[in-house]
Length: 257
Image (cartoon, rainbow, N blue to C red; front, side, top):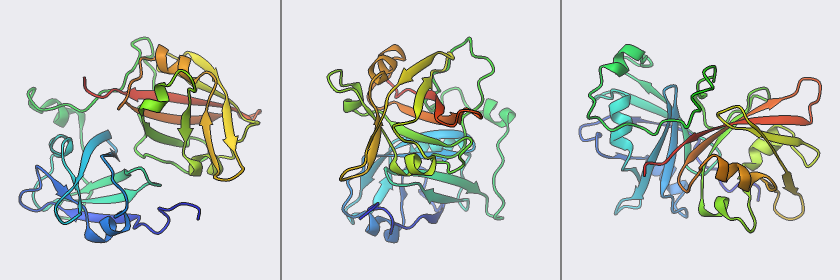
């Protein structure tokens, strides 16, 4: 029974046809695999960053990208004939995407190109960086990584993440297993200002296997002004001589107020 998304199509592509600017309908075969799901948002990662997009089903039951999609279109300079290759990442409507032009060459984006964009264009959420941290590395270009050295994942904050009575933050099961994280792991979170927060990693092995951050999470959540709907990127760093000592760098992409 492990992983109800195991049979889901992992890769698909969409050609930009006339009218694509306002909505994008995902392939029927992919939607069929998720017919029991009722998603309300998707996270799409490209080399330019992460993008939160509202998801709705049309009258045929097909999943559509809605609010937030025009923003994605604008920032990736999409035109009719371009196409996008999507990789579905371990559930929760997380995707990695690559953008190609009609010649089948992957599009390249430069800083100069971005500066030419209209000041009136909608902007994606900017990461909640601390001004003092000038050497912070840019965010990675995937939602879930299987590289043990710099593995990372993305989560959208939900109401239960702010619960003071039982503070917790779930960690994807695939991430736990692929990085050999257990209750022996000494876990800390590093915020954008470089401050280290000691937290407790809890693992449930009886019944449904799962894991979450318990003690210390609420203090981190409050101090970093996280809120429902924010998108957080977690990147793992393991101590070279103490493999059970793990630090996760956390970047926050606040949801618009």
